[in-house]
Image (cartoon, rainbow, N blue to C red; front, side, top):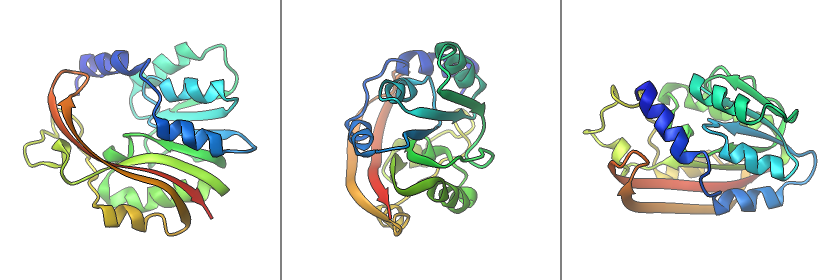
Length: 200
């Protein structure tokens, strides 16, 4: 994506509606209330987590994301932001890991190691709330221009997603198949697996 397209995306998602999965996940978390927001974008999930008294560690690979979030949360001492990828982030111990539409962009070869880091970061009883890209999504197709958008697109089948949760109790597993327009107004077919799971 160009710098301008990234900015437009953040403008369009900064105040987006909070997903019911995240609301449910937050309701399950006890103490300590420590969350990691993977790919924090414009900070909509961080804002929601702060409303529920979490300490939040947010990271994103895009400089624009971190600059926006630093400005947005500059008066809040419970937000810790860093420009990092999934591979480079130093995962603290947490009771909640949020990865909404961000694991889509992991390097396939690094994903097993990344997932192990996420799993180890969660306390026993901690909650994962996130989504995975399915094979019928537009981004999984041969016509998707990786050079124009993101070079890494991680596509998983349902069986592969479920296998990642061997050490978890799956609370909610939802397959989404919808058609519509992206925030940039581009036609898109979505195929997403959304998961809430509790670590054993």
